Length: 191
Image 1 (cartoon, rainbow, N blue to C red):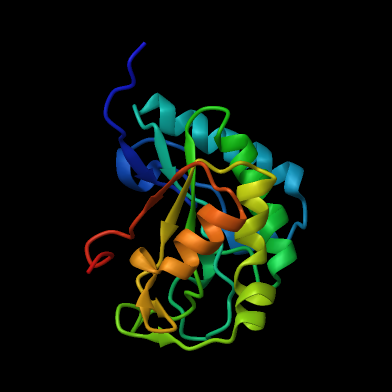
Image 2 (tube, rainbow, N blue to C red):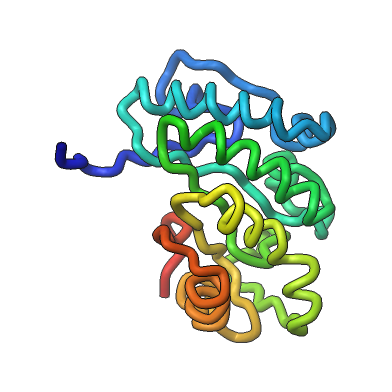
């Protein structure tokens, strides 16, 4: 059958904030403290099931940013500070959610500040980018086969993430062979 329009629901804690009655899960930071990717798979499956029940086909989760800046206002939405841990937990979530809807790994990449997120240009060397800010995204792309990746508001080395050829073309689509689609973050995500 033909697939209808994609209805996206933001869902790091569940879909209840946007659609009404649904389960509100603990924040990802608290779930990350369990160090239990299988439990996170079950959480992702439950959120995916509820998103589908409300007619969604795309879940805007998990948030996978490395917590580096103390003023990052969305710190509770990520699993922690370690790329390996974030990748394992996010892969669990994606595996469960994608039993019902498409998951969207966000915010690619090097997003760790809130108040200047649309203006900051993260100047970063290649080694730090690949060792700290990309391994968890690579893991969900290659191991969990995430359906979608959301670009971040910020720039990396002079190019906004939504149109950064090195991040999207060279690494995500080229090296990692990502077969899914990239969406920009909402409102101010494209230039």
